[in-house]
Image 1 (spheres, rainbow, N blue to C red):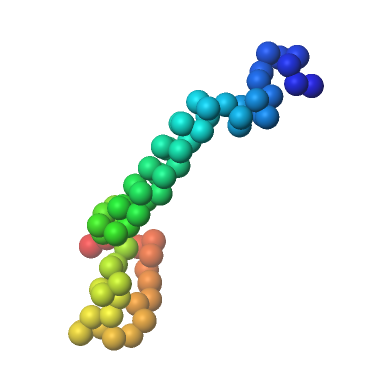
Image 2 (spheres, one colour):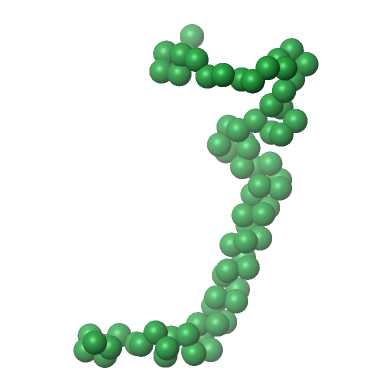
Length: 74
């Protein structure tokens, strides 16, 4: 029941110029921010993931298995 609560209809919102001005700026900004977050390597630092060139080192060529995950750190 559109209008009974005073809300704007969906069609009214998406035909609004203000809607398109706001979203034409925010949506590309989110994609650019995400791309920069990953491409600069900050995502690897924040989440502690190894970078693609750090998965296999000279000393460790096998698959890194997690053992003792819940054991206390030494």
